[in-house]
Length: 371
Ligand code: NAI
Ligand code: MG
Image 1 (cartoon, rainbow, N blue to C red):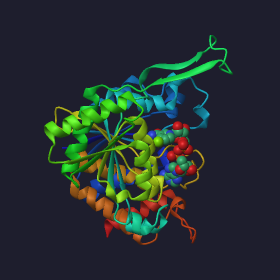
Image 2 (image 1 turned 90 degrees about the vertical axis):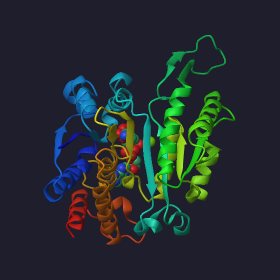
Image 3 (image 1 turned 180 degrees about the vertical axis):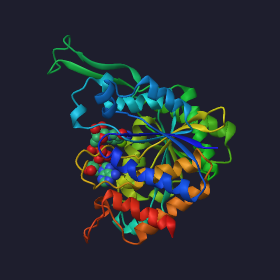
């Protein structure tokens, strides 16, 4: 049975890093007897340029039907002037919302070969293996009301405008992402740390109460702690190995996972998975994408690190296709290439050296798979 995949390379470096994933997919088809039914589509600015919308209904429908969607990145300065309703990000937000991908898994693992390149000392990050579970379909990025309005009745407001977003969470939204975190923790270090700002936010108080409720009623065997998200940011940098699974909301998760990126060396190393409810075939709806964006500053120059996107495909092998062994094979190949000193520009330390290009990195990983 073929695994169905929809590949959406997107904008900027998205197509460059995705080309290396396609090499990896071809390798697994040729050498591991796997069969992938691969379709390609447009998302973000690329889709806007072709169709006037960041995601067509046809592509949306296709995404709902496949076992897994692989996405590169969306956005770029060219599209910054567009109305919010057709901004590239809207394509991605629509995929997440309509597929109901409420649990965003962001692992932060420190590969030994890169421990000295982390922003932190080797003794702080060596062996680091944490998983941030970010709520992805609700919170302040979606809450209503939102908008920029005139504030004419307020004479004390210089400039006369007000910008509004709303942080809104239901108990059900909190409980289902908490369950995901507890389930994952049981397969790892059995520890969950929930992060919010219950000291200053009503939604934070509800978050803390509901996570505690799920713990007490369904997962009493898992160790649960709570932490204010600002302290969490500090602890992530001070002593990140104290954590196993971190569960947090959409906004805090966005920021904390970018901070976690620096623990592992580069944004170019960080994969992610976004999972929803199971489909009729039992597989969760799923979208895999690197954490990084479209990196317009290096787009088109062959400088992008394809590892985040390749490791995102490894997560697809593990979580969508139950091919854990293949996922490990791929992760070991990445580890070997790094141990051999192969580096894209973003992984060059102060000691310097000659970086490889995006496609050379892909070729080295294929060569490591061969060996
Ligand atoms: P970014 O992640 O694109 O880039 C941040 C910095 O990291 C840049 O200096 C970039 O060169 C570097 N970088 C990122 N990925 C890299 C890789 N694979 N290899 C080597 N270096 C890499 O974030 P930024 O600059 O804030 O946003 C650029 C555009 O991407 C914006 O339009 C933004 O909206 C969009 N974006 C899209 C995301 C997505 O598609 N999921 C996520 C974040 C930003
Ligand atoms: Mg971000």
